Length: 306
Image 1 (cartoon, rainbow, N blue to C red):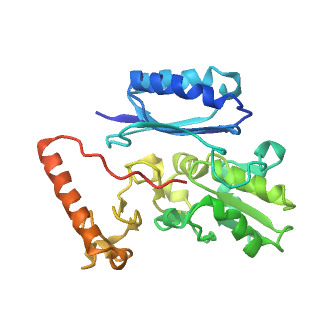
Image 2: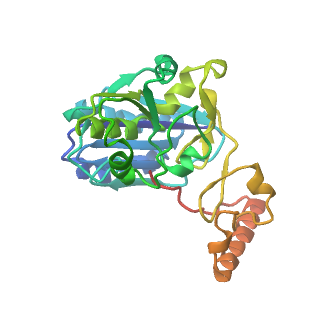
Image 3: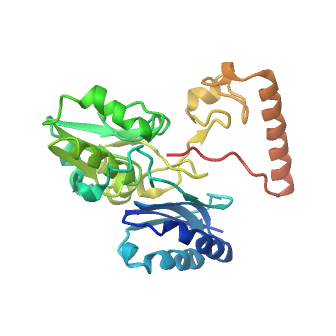
């Protein structure tokens, strides 16, 4: 049976966020909602899945609070099992830049709608930056975009200092998966003196939803943080798979490599794995195969964090 997947975030003053945790855990269990929900002083950020009626009731509880009543929610359906459980996390930030003082409410970049994005990034004086991490950029990005080559969003400030420090008058256009990282990254630039900063409203997911493939400047697939791994235009499920060991997206050459072993290793990580680790992963792969044959569930490794 198809599952509904909803992604959302909103920056808002949320000092009572910890008080929501128990109630939402109980409601999520009742409504069979799974996924990850992050609560912090600066707001809320989540990707959730479940039966549409139950998921709607869960989201209605959140949006019944006036701080989140106009929160944009993007929903799609998939036949894939996206999450195995509900995790509600309390954190200092809903997306971890490492500086809780940087808030979009104190100044951020200008939103650009998906329909206007192509014109902006086609301008020769605009520097287009992919704010996502390296393993996300690996499977798709906008043509000509700069890859900061970060492993976590917490490395963004270092990238800016090293690569953009003397470019504060230059036009900068940035994008990310759903809009949250580039909104905070744009706030970081603006609050550090950058004069002309733009970011894609709703992120890549909004662009792939609104812009037709024949008009698109996007190449490849978009990494998502659930067991679908990626989506394409129209928010359809992608074909990308991950190496179970290192969680790196795999391409055709990886699958054809003699160093690829399903559930165990890929060319990127094979030399770093001990024989003991390989043995453990082979046993896990064997148990997963048995679980599929018996039509029972075998819990997998957690997806990477933002």
